[in-house]
Amino acid sequence: MKPVHRNRRLGLIAAGAVLLGGAAWLIFAALERNISYFYTPSEAAEAGLGPDTRIRLGGLVQNGSLVHGDGLEITFRVTDGDATLPVAYAGIVPDLFREGQGVIAQGAFDEEGVFHAKTILAKHDENYIPKELEGISHEAADPAYIPPAN
Image (spheres, rainbow, N blue to C red):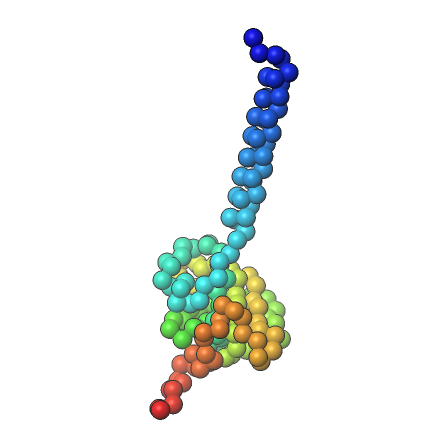
């Protein structure tokens, strides 16, 4: 017959393992709900993201696409040179937000494919380019841009 203290010890270890596993599951579940991946317009179009999937969409604000609506509502298009996606936002935009500049919008797509941003981030000076946007040239924001002939 096994001693009683050994059974108690095994019970405490098992209960601790269950509690630790439950805490880990809660942490990972919370992280999964709150995580948002970064996509360029091309990557977002290829990924086929469903409505209400939270992401960060980054690229350049396409020249001629910024439209101010009622109050603080604006719409614009974000491009990476290959693909362009419509964005809608209601709120105060950063001072440096303008056409032809880099932007990262956090939000989700709706059923019609319009990205509804909850947060807009703009670059902080003319030399700064976010790591995710380094390969995108500012000419990509201008649909009428024609590269010079060599």
